[in-house]
Length: 130
Picture 1: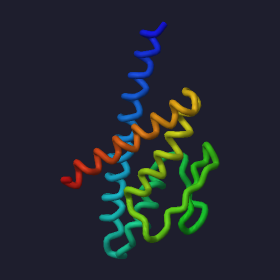
Picture 2 (picture 1 turned 60 degrees about the horizontal axis):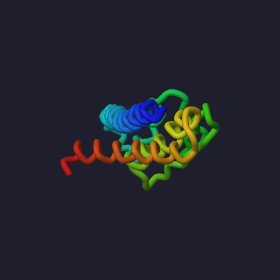
Picture 3 (picture 1 turned 45 degrees about the horizontal axis):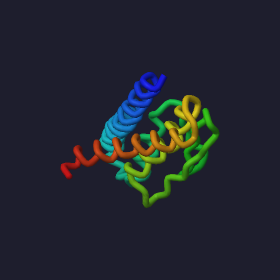
Picture 4 (picture 1 turned 90 degrees about the horizontal axis):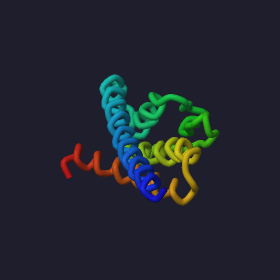
C-alpha cells in the first residue's frame, strides 16, 4: 500500500506543478492579448490583469475591482495598484485550492497549492529573463 500512496503523491505533486505553470502561461498569454487589444485606450496593468482573469472559465466580475469564482463563491479584489503576478497567484489560491480540496486532505492541499505557486513563479521568472 505504501508504494501506491507514493505513486499517488508523486502524481499529485506533478499535477500541482503543471497546473501552476499552465495557469501562469495561459494568463500571461491572455494578458498580452488584452494589452495589445486595448493598447489605444492605455488601461492600467491591473485592469488588463482583471481582463486576463475573466478569460478563465467560471470567473465573473462583480464589482469594479472584485472578481468572483462562481464554483466556490470566493471573491478576490484586484486593486488598481496590482499586477499580473498578483492576479495569477489569486487565481491559483482560489481556483486550484477549490479543485484540489475535493481530492486531498487540507494539509496536502496546502502543500500542493504551494507547489503550484512555486511553478507559476518559476515560469514567470523564465519568461522575464530572471
